[in-house]
Amino acid sequence: MDRPPGDPFASPDGWSDLAKDGDPWATAVLAALNGMTVGSYAGLGQEASFKFQLIVCADGSIAEVRTRLSTGRPDFDGQIRNALTALKLPKAPPAIAAQLGSKCKKIPYEFTWRGASQRGSVH
Image 1 (cartoon, one colour):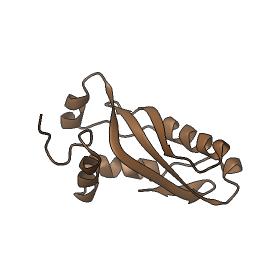
Image 2 (tube, one colour):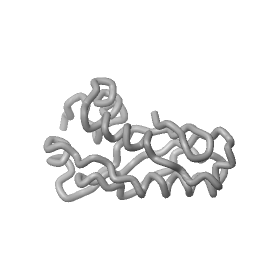
Image 3 (cartoon, helix red, strand yellow):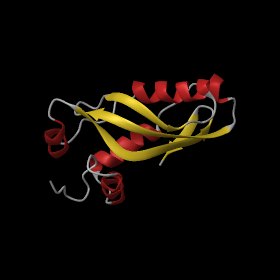
Image 4 (cartoon, rainbow, N blue to C red):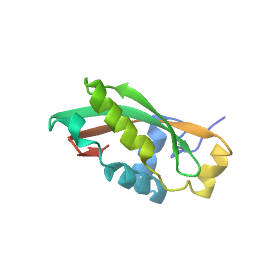
């Protein structure tokens, strides 16, 4: 089945297309990700990168965080995963929610959190 451009569940490019085009839902999801606070004791103030994928549900909950590239420090990885799973993302708009139905789905895009200690940014 062909999927339209900008489908966040079809390919990594789908999320990139949504974000690049300023889609309100994608923009709000990135704002939530960028606003999260990571536990400070694990970060130790050192610069780190953590790549991950999200399995999201229509209600805005994150069902799972899949690590794609560790920071190299299991304690810090755990703190980042905990911060991500605690986030409440915006509810999916009707077109996205229709694709999800009652399931949660993986966004194939690999997000990257970069930062030092509590604050970072997601790309």
